[in-house]
Structure formats: C-alpha cells, structure tokens
Amino acid sequence: MNNKLNSILLIDDDEATNFIHQFVIQDHGFCNHIVTKLNGQEALDYLDTPNENGLPNPDIIFVDINMPTLDGWGFLEKYETEFGRQPSKIIVMLTTSLNKHDKERAESMNVISEFRNKPLSTEILDEIVEKYFTNKAITQ
Image 1 (tube, rainbow, N blue to C red):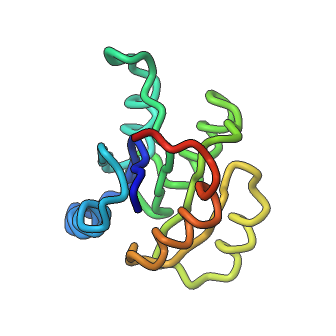
Image 2 (cartoon, rainbow, N blue to C red; image 1 turned 30 degrees about the vertical axis):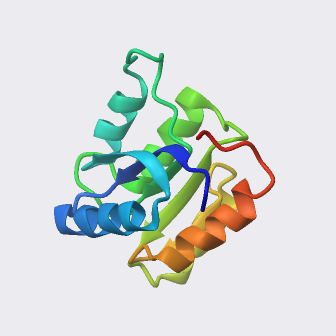
C-alpha cells in the first residue's frame, strides 16, 4: 500500500491482543498513528478531547465486545449518540465471539461497518482497504 491512513483506534482490554494488532498494522505499513484504549469509556474520552489538530478523527476504529467499564456495545451506542454516524468513519467490531446473536446485533447497527473475528490479520486489513479506501483520498 503506497498511501497510509492517518490513524487507527484499537479498543480492547487485552493488552497482549493490542500489542499483536499494533504489530500487524505496523508491519503492514497500514497507517501513520495507532492509538489503543482499554475500554469504551477511555475511547470516548479520547475522541472527545481535542489535540493540536482538533478532535481525534481515526480513519478506522476496531472495537472488541467484552471489556470492563464500558463494553463494545455501550461504546457504540454512546458513540452514535455523541458523535453521530460519520460516513467516512469505518468501525469494525473485532471479537472472539462466535455467538450468532452478537453478529446479528452488529449487523443491525448502522454505526458498524464490519463484524470480524480476531485476530486482526494483514488479510483483514487488505480487505478493509480494498472495500472502503480504494479510489478514495488517503492521507499520505
């Protein structure tokens, strides 16, 4: 991939999983900046805190379901209420859940772009880039 996304937000309470996913993204050359948060509330606080460029605006958000404090479902509900569905934002529920009800619930939520099973891989990244970012301007 010649062009990179500006940033990706990983939301998962498992630090080992975050480490592996960061490694996959970095090894793939997928984006310039990776931010990890350990639960949905930390992620909402991050997204609502201005930095030198304004509010953080990750190109992709990967969110797990089961986390303490605020789980993935709670994050998504609050995100949609507080931030609205931003058409350029790609949100991928990345989980180990094999529960068909979780997948059905995810597919019924407009805010979710994809429902994928962990672990994150270069194949998943390639598919997301192809589907959502090919022929679109990507920050260099």
